[in-house]
Image: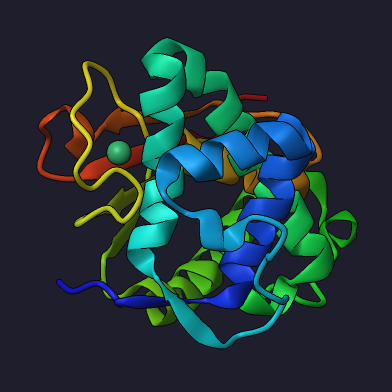
Length: 207
Ligand SMILES: [Zn+2]
């Protein structure tokens, strides 16, 4: 399976705005300096689909959190960034993953998880166009299994524990948006800790 080399501006626009919101302007400047991504300081790419920047820049932002804050320190911030990333995207850039027009409040409660699965399939197809053919999505009794290999988020990272908290937070944001309630999302395999893929489980809520 292969990865795309360039990513749409919109992804950088969302990530940088979310990081600024969470870390503050100065915090983000420090991270970008440390990451060697000075080109983004005070110069966020626009909210459009142009493919200008390398996927490596995107990865670099994620790995820098771990380098600067350590595994434990980075977890909560990465999770929060992923979660907020989904809600900002749903608001200002829903066409990025084809979810424009979806209104979760329109679905009956007992059908919501199935609607979430449908929505995530649509999002995954759109993400293949952005990131490349790196995803596997499976439905199981427990809920939804989502795999990424190779992972654009943790490539090059070596950690003790699973580290793709941005992805976990993003999926947590997506399922909470659809269901109107929180449900358990966890990463159970991660390439950063030596597994052959990153695997996420979104648990079907118990009644
Ligand atoms: Zn991972």
